[in-house]
Length: 477
Image (tube, rainbow, N blue to C red):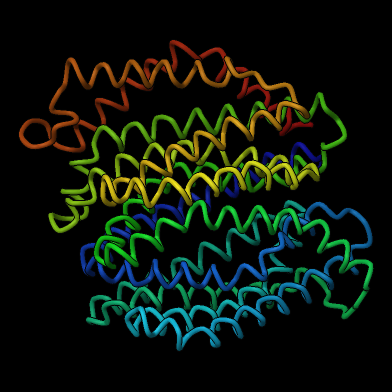
């Protein structure tokens, strides 16, 4: 099977399983939001912040390094496994060491959840190598199937324990069960033969490659988790609960696009990194379709945020609506932002990613406390939107050095239909964005989908046809 066929077929399979998983995740998120309190989600978000803080020692981009590495697979896989497990064990030691200190400032539940998550992360680290081996070979059918069934299994347990009154701990069960089920499945699959090889040069190569990814990971952590720390520490876990749920629902539609496309695009970019023409063609195709699908999803949720929150989540979540709308802007920008980082990493330029992430981290460290002081929790969302916009400008400045980007062909077919849909909602169907009386939520949603789809066909129908032909050609050849 050719590279094109493997990439397209992998994308289709990843799409099917990922969207099925997103559907399950979406339903479970709504059920848990209705059964649990905002404070429960705030505790989990704060525990995850410290989990990732102490986990910085393991974030050397070993997965990306293994994908990029094209020589001596036995040594590369063994080194990847040893580094993943070793650094994860060190992060557990850090967590246990700092646990007593955290108890002085935070509720005991935060520290308890943190320790549980940290211990089970060791299992996740031990299963990282078989997962990446599968995905490097574009064998996504195996890895995504495991992810899907692990999600279903953990979702059933989480909802069951929530209905039984376990409260916060049902969210812990959700995370732990997913890790355990997926870990067992990946090891039983035996996608690679474990051979213990300790090669000093290979270890040094992984660490050198991952150093800039580590810097980038540190700044990404600050970029996307710093707000959780500030909100949870100074505004309380209930406020953080509203923010974390808004963050999750805002990025879910666009992450469902990028998780499918970019996951397959990363190894594809790596394989094409020495052919600028093919690389440019592939990059433009990927980015165009990310924007094509992310823009309407974010727009529709923005226009119907009131109905979405009230109808699906319930009245207790209404305070999150302003945050939700602001973070939907972030969600769309994130989909465009992430593809640039995946591209630069795949072609072996992680140092460029660390440059613009460093600038963004510095900006958010300064702006978030100031904006939260002026606008409350909404200030955290405003800060994130601004920083993402700055990051996109810098990231695509670097990307344009390696590929020819068709900005007009990417932006025009999506943003004009979005403008038409927005204008329609404002001037012809004001109740579409006001909620309350009038058509039902579903009816309003269908009207806006129809307006956007018709506008998109008029503006970009020809390009859609060409992209379909491109997919068919790659499928056959």
